[in-house]
Image (cartoon, rainbow, N blue to C red; front, side, top):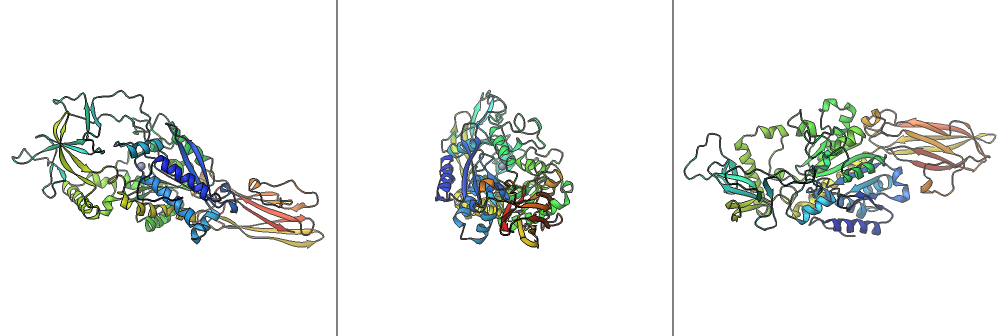
Length: 571
Ligand SMILES: [Zn+2]
């Protein structure tokens, strides 16, 4: 199994790599199709854990996906990088070995399998699905993106017009800047209209050319039930929550894996690790969860170099109309999973442009915008030989006549890193998955002993503890919503002698010779705190058993998110 991150991978290549993983590392991974896409492609999920140390379902889990948005293909590559890194380093790197022995990772590298293929193999951009929405498409008048000059790219067109809103910057002839409000026509100054490279349906030179409506307007990441809204309020939301087969598949997988403690969904672009809330400020968050998010965010920033920010606090410029219905909202607000969404790739950051909250962009002056654009062009010239900006070149447009086509490379420039910068992007962001797993709750048996009391009686004592940072319920919102199973301990007086993963967590029938004199066969220990708080992290349980010396007894501990334990002792 080999993969290199010097290119973006097609569906077949991703699929071949995942199949190679299971044949090369059969003891560490399992591949599962969690569902089919609109066009019938499998959506793959690769589970990674050391199965000889216990079933995946009995270990705390990190779920990570990529490419819920078709064009954000760096997300998929980052997940593939994490998969490759974990498998190649198991048994070599002590942190990875520990994590795969005690935790499980569920990786879904590419969700929008149809859309990503379309994005990678045609000049077109696409948000999510190839399904036409809302409804069968009846072509309306307007401009449709097309690779008119046949160079394989859909760039920007500039069309000369004395009434245009744009002109060429004095500082760099590639840069288009806005015409000032008081700027009357000046001899020698050329004004332009800017629009996407494309063709116009029902073109009429006497009326304004507008962008045609989106033929495939679905946005998978607005199709989740939490805060979901109809399309007149939230663009792309779909007919109803989970109306899209891809989203239903993701949801079914997450809900049927109650051991998932934390979730990461990889997007592009911007250079941020995003966290909840989407529709409320930090003051509405449980203060203990906010503390966890701030602490985890600090680690995210150390590892990735990207700041961790609340979507509502930082990215929502109109606080009365936040974007709704995302995977992140559903995972944290409805399931109580510690969730993040990383916006990979930060071209502005590379160019030295400082980060600002979304609201600051609304009030940015024309001069400031020009300075930022100039910084981007400078970085492009110095770092990648100017390759990401296509210089304006004359073209005879079949409808508009003389135009020029050029501008920023939209796919592998703005939206995704150029290939030479892909691997480092994947690496620093993929590594944060390991830290997410390291924060998970983790139950352990500190002590499991049998003390003879005489007359065939034994006191069996067990001390259970949570060694993790997070409490056994993960977030505090999960505790409030009762979304994480409590910790239960049971004693088995005739355990199977051979460990059988299929029977993990089950107790065989009682033997007649051994009997429980005091204590409960099964006891609910409630939840355990962690280093992040949440109360007692260590609890003691004892039983009195009548039995034969040397006969086996097993202690089983089961939980939702903190893992299962099984230990055999002898009376
Ligand atoms: Zn996205």
